[in-house]
Length: 145
Figure 1: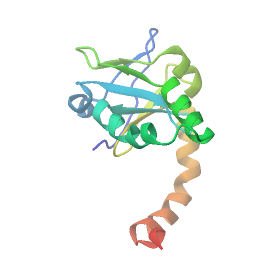
Figure 2: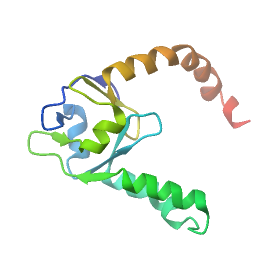
Figure 3: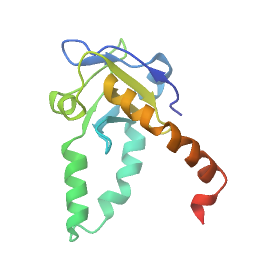
Figure 4: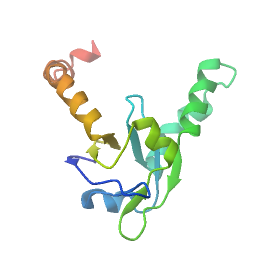
């Protein structure tokens, strides 16, 4: 499980150090891809494969399925972190998420998210009140009704 917020720096080659707490789970391989909130999602390879299983078996005769498959796969990059625990973010993904030197790495339970520091500050500030309301609904089981 990925938890916590970290602030590594993106170097001139587009690399950052994974937080030490995340390295063991991501060391065998990872997939970094676009997320829907203009951030990047980093999945352990096995988790990404499980997640995409239903997408890969969905009927390609449906335009929405083809669109989703293309966008997910085209924006994904698989790699193995180097011996120092660094991950390279390809230029297209850095551009998509608006990443520069200052980034925020957030544990998001089954994935790691990478945000530009300004974008994360804006997002997390805007979500404070929503989070308080969601906590009551989701944890009380209201969302299932």
